[in-house]
Amino acid sequence: MDKQPITKEGRRRLGEELHDLKMVQRPQTVEEIDIARSHGDLKENAEYHAAREKLRFIEARIAELGELYDNSREVDPSKFTHDKVMFGSTVTLEDVDTGEQVTYTIVGTYESNPDKGLISIVSPLARQLIGKEEEEEVTVQLPGGEKTYEIVDICYKEIEL
Image (cartoon, rainbow, N blue to C red):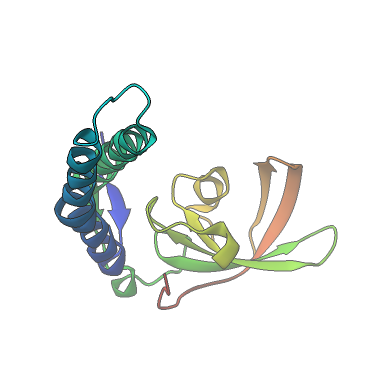
């Protein structure tokens, strides 16, 4: 499997979340389980069952983030020219039907936040934009249907996660 790109800040944040889960939240939850276990009958012990469920969630999140971390490679998009759409590009698109403009920055999977205009490099929209140049039209399949955009601008902007 190819490693997914991630920014330095994204990788740092991913590492911090993993560290917090492993070194703070998991040990606290194990302690909560031990305390709840000491209260006796486990069949009707809601605190025990809640703590076990919390631990399962933490373990699943550790596995998910660990895989993301292992399968990512740090990339500095500020070093690219951004004459074509690529990882780290901020792209302004104009809907050819409505004239409405939208701006997205293409980031790694962990960093994506569509509400902030940060879309994952593996998202359908980003995959269809990669390699395109300014003034090119691109027709994309989105969940709401097909849209045609003109690429108005491609540049690099510092990403705020």
